[in-house]
Structure formats: C-alpha cells, structure tokens
Length: 229
Image (cartoon, rainbow, N blue to C red; front, side, top):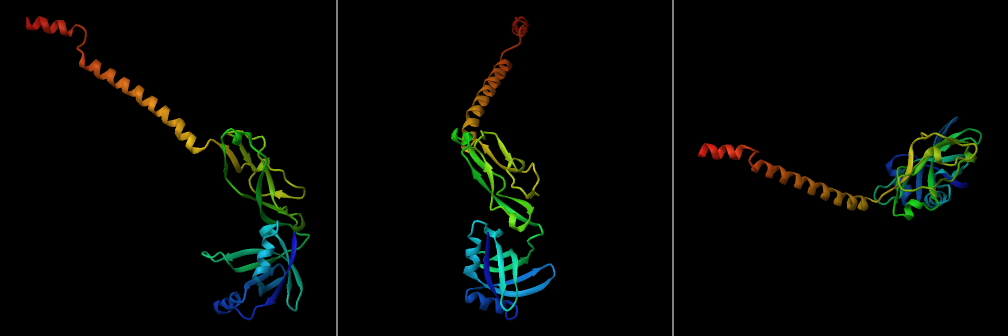
C-alpha cells in the first residue's frame, strides 16, 4: 500500500513552533535517511491518520512531497502520541529505497476456527506481531495464524506461520504466537474437588494416628494390671 502526503517546510523548531502547528491541524515531523540531511517539515494531521488507517497500517509506504523540493519514498518511524488524548504529536519519516531491504513489524492475524475453542478452550496470545526483512514493495499487510487444527494444549509458533516469498523472518522461529488453553475458571473448579479430596484423606490419616496414640500398645495394659494387683 502506497499513499502520497504533502509536506511543508517547518518555520523553525522548538516547543512554541510545534504548538502553533498542532493548533492548526499540522504535525511536526523530520525527514531523514541515507544521503539526506535531516529536514524539518510539517504534514496535515488528517492526511497522516488516513494513511495509517489503510490495510498496511504503520507500514504504509508514504510518498512525501516536500514543498519546493523532491518526493521521497518513506516509512513513518518514531511516532509520538499524547499519552492522554492519543493525538499524534510528532513523526519521523525515514527515507527508503525500493531496491534496499527494510525491517518492519507485521501484525499476526488469526484465521480459522479451533476445535479446542469449540470444546471450551480459549486462545492465549503471546505476541501480536513478528519482525521481518524484505523490499519495501514486498511488505505483507499481515501474516495469518491458522488455528483450524489446534486442540487444547497446542501451541502455534513463528515457524508455523506461512511466509510470503521474498520475506525473511527475523523473530526467532521457536517464539510462541498463541496457544489454546483451558480457561482459568475451569482450572480452579477442577483443582477445588481435588484439593478437598486430599484434605479428606489427610484428615482420616490424622484421626487414625491420634487413635493409635491414644490406645495402649499390645501387652502394656496387662502389665499395668499385674503391677496394680
């Protein structure tokens, strides 16, 4: 996925300039990359949001048209957001080349219906994305995790994902993506009767030991009667 965004020269730097830009719907940004001195620019906030809402998400290729200059193929990097409102405060645009591999994080998408889930299990996610390397034009929008054959107790790992041609996975092959497990509430319900049974057995053993301690040993009672006589 590739989109075009207009960028205008940023009139200076600093918090004051950035605040004025945000007030008029602009996002302060920096364009940098190999063979390019960092350039301070500003882009329209809504244009940036629309770009990120495409199927490619944060990995969307952006043709950044710099005012009075050239158009650069870029990827958005180091996205800063307001911790409370979630609005975009700043973004770095990394200039890339179509014939040079890049490293990106691609989301994992669950597909299929798990027999284990139908039996009462639940899916436990361990990671939501994997890191890969490929040419900019080969970046997949997502990687599918097929759970259609997973039963309770099964684990799906990075090595189980179907990898598109021209893509190299950088995340360790044995890293867990997700598993189908018994719900925690069922574990508690199963453990409770077992614990009660163990307590019952322990109680019976304890009572038996107390009874044995209270009863005189064989022969001691007769010996005691002879001494008293």
